Amino acid sequence: MLFAHTRWRMPSTRFLRRFSASPSLYQFSKPIQWTPACPSPACECAPTPSDLDIDRKSPLFNTMAAYAEQVVICTGKSDWTSRIEDEEGDTGDFVRGVKGVIGKGGGAFDPFNNVMITASSFPTKGRAGHTSVHLFPSFKTVSSIPNSTTSYSAFATAYLKARQLHPAHNTLPEAQKKQLLRDESARTQFLEIEDDFISVLVCGHGGRDKRCGVMGPLLQSEFIRQLRRKGIFVPDEEDTKSSENKDKVKARVGLISHIGGHKYAGNVILYIPHSRSGSALSGMGIWYGRVGPENVEGIVEETIIGGRVIRELFRGGITSEGGNLGRMLEEQEKGDGALKLKPKMRG
Image (cartoon, rainbow, N blue to C red; front, side, top):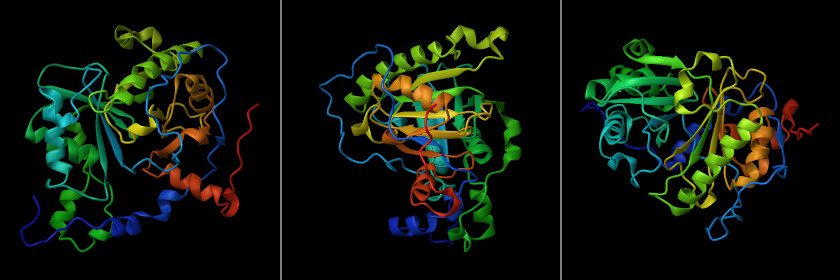
């Protein structure tokens, strides 16, 4: 709840843009490696349906809305109502509950700390009345969160609130600043593990838009096929607990709900875990648009294995510290200083 003596208004778009453009979010210690175009597939794949109204003319670059954390809810379903907060049962309860804390009108709403909440087809974990989630780019899995007002507040405090407040909050009362800040000691209340899976999230929200509803399952199947061709272990549900697979490079591929930009279907987010320390994209999330089955082999080879961004498909991305990868690439393309961008040539 906002304090009665403090009048708080949502900052204007111009204000947010001016104050959100922190140089620290656009700096990176080394150049981002990239390749201009997605290579053609070396094997046959399913064709992209020709009757979908996909925007192939508008620029894709920097069409990703900046965010601090993505909450991926394990629902065990492959489609949802148009607004996932209208879902019945645990998923809808969880979305409404968390948004009631950090969403607009919530007591811990912070316009400078955008949290994206999406449903996914990943299997549910735990029992009824509880929700499990994957968090990116924190790369954590939190299981069996009780669906209760107290737990929603504690979860937001432990994982979703800002670690450091934006300078625009400097004039707020200290008590209100504390309400907006993360307290990681609250994590002891939850079942949490580090997530070392490569995560491929494909928008398949047919309940919201036909284009993603059609493209999503096609891309999900093709990613699973191509990852396995490259020797990456994509487990079936029953394989996830097998100790013999614990040392393998692992990936999960799931459908997710709306992330914006249906006209750019297929929309795909790749999260490369810290355990992939040899990748230049370790700890990052990469957003691609206009992805067809014919692009999947190239994405696996260039981005997941090679650590290179495919420029023609690139919508944006996020670093493990919350930096805006699209803006960083934009700065490199301007040729600033020692980070003048050059495409990484394929061997």
